[in-house]
Structures are given as C-alpha cells and as structure tokens.
Length: 418
Image (cartoon, rainbow, N blue to C red; front, top):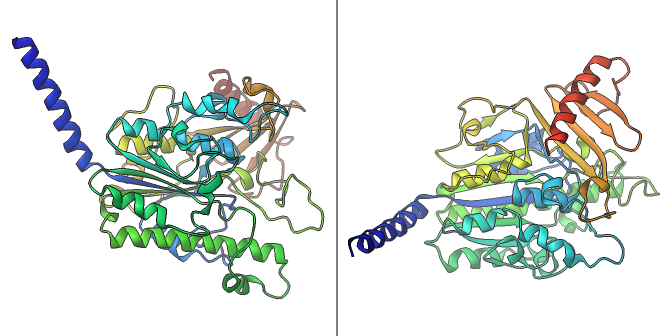
C-alpha cells in the first residue's frame, strides 16, 4: 500500500514538474528559407537585395555567418533540419526515389528518425508544419498539426507565405497556454519566381537580367513574410519567450543564360553542388535574455539546430545526433568545441533508397579557412581557401599538397565513423 502511494506521488510530481517546466520553456519558431544565396541578405553584405525585416532580426540575434548545410539539395537538407542527422543517417538523401519506386517507401525513414516535433511532443509541446515538407503526411515527422498531407514538395502547405499566414495564427491562438514549435518553411524565394509587381519594379533596372531581377524581388518578398510573422508574435506578446531560428535549406546562384546548365535555373556552383554557393547559409538565433546579439565566427552546421532547440526546450539530444547545441556560443560564452564541419552531396534521383553511399557524388570538409572537396567518381580533390576566395574560384590542390593530404585524412576519419 505504501509502495503504491509512493508511486502515485511520484507520478503526480512528474506531471506537475512537466507542467511547470513546459510553462517556463520557450516557444520555438523555425524560419526556413528556400533556394537563397548566402550573400543575398542585407545583413550578409548585399548592396542590392533588400531584407529589412531579417536585417532587424539579425541585429537582435546571435548571427553565425559561417553556417553550412551538409547537403545542398532541399529534401535531404530539410530532413537534416528536422532530425539533426546527416543524410547518410536519416537516409533521405535524394529528392526522388528510383523510377518505378513508390515515394511512400521513403516515408519510414522520417517515421523512424528522432524528428524534433516528435521529441518535443514528449516534452509537452504542440507543433505545426507549414510550407515545404517532402515526407507525406505531417504526422510522419511527429507534428501534432500541419498543412501537408501528401505531395512532393508540400502540397497544400505551400500556400503559406505566398498566399496566407492565417493558418499559423489560428494554430497558435487555439491553445495559447501550451508551448509550441512552428515550422515556417515557405517555398520562397524558390521558383516559381513570380514576385508582386510592386517589388519587381524595384529590381528590374536597366542592364539587369530579368531572371536576376525576379530572383532578387523574391528574396525581398520572402523577407516581408518573415517580418509579418515576427510582428505578429510581438503584437501577441509572444516574442520575449520565443526562440527564433533562421536558416536556408540550400544556396542559389541565379542562372541568367538562355540555356540551362543544370537541372534548373541555377548556376553550377550553387544548389546540388559541393561549393559554398550551394552549402553555405547564415544562421540566426534570437531568444531574448538568453542569446547575445553579435556575429560569431564559429563553424556551424544545420545538424546543430535540432540539438540547440531541443536543449532550449529542456530535452536531451539522442546519442545518434553528432551536432552541438549552439546556445552557449550564442550567449557569448565561448567558441564551440569543434574545428571542422562536414557534408556529403548526393544525386537528385536515388540509385538505391536503402544504400546512401550508392547515391554519393562528393564529400567535403571545412576546417579553419580551408575547404576540401572530394569527388567520388574522379577520386580526386579540390582545395580552396574560402576566406581569401569565398566564391571558390582558384583550386589550390596542386600547390598545397600537404594540406590536401591532411584534410583528406580528416574527411576520411569522419566518413569512416559514420
């Protein structure tokens, strides 16, 4: 009898503790841009693209300009943002399965992964999926609520941003007392590049390629939607207890020629490539009273974002996650305990959905100022000093043989430990 009474007391204590802790934990808003170059923000130095709302947020945030996504392809990158895992871990490496293979055969990968919405649900959080989501029904990733139930890019969820923000506001207001996680991933500035005419007029100047003008206008349109969301959080008095995370799934350099040189209207050294034009993304973290505004030079990866958000919400990252929480670094408490970030590039359409290595085209590592790219087919490397040469115009591999050897060893140790 005493044992039963003690067990009941423990259950009541646990339930009370969870309720209190949940009340003290932050809401989390994750803003995911889509196909935007790392330089195409005002706060990243652009003199052309105007992003006033994200610039204001950056001034209030811990800004990590040396952020990277391991894989410069949207589906694989988004899966990493949801799971904190590399592509070879979550196995959602490619946009499409092989011809003749049902897309639904890839859905168990996200169902079985430690997806953030599922982990946050255990901590008492509601979660809402909007916009880009490749993995079928939103519940496959553990979201409690969402807009996408089928489709390749995100189906009905893709109206968010371009057409409406109301579903987000309705979700948050439905239960204002319970902490929430919001996945705001409008397919912007992603194609179709169909910005409002009022914005296009700003960028369609004489001498500028019309394709480039449309892309620039899309970047500002995306910024406007972010500004609307952030202003609404302020108005609802939610901003002070909300961790805002901003990231882009992969980069973009607009193709301006008459003939496509890649699968889409992007230049060869951007999306789907192992170059910084496809891999690099600034990362912003704003949590009032917890993060310290400023720019931090740490090498960071999008595998760090799930551990960061989970830690902020009182959770503990699962052991398979190799990323680091950015909270201490973002609070100005010292640099991260790492000197390198890694990644892998896969084909667009899978050769084999169950064997990630068969879909691999490149591996890469950045350590300090140097970045090495390993070409799987050629069995050869390229080497760049991305501080002196941020657009990777001069391959230094032949003149820096020792550096190539050293970084190849670093890259191989990471890969062999997968």
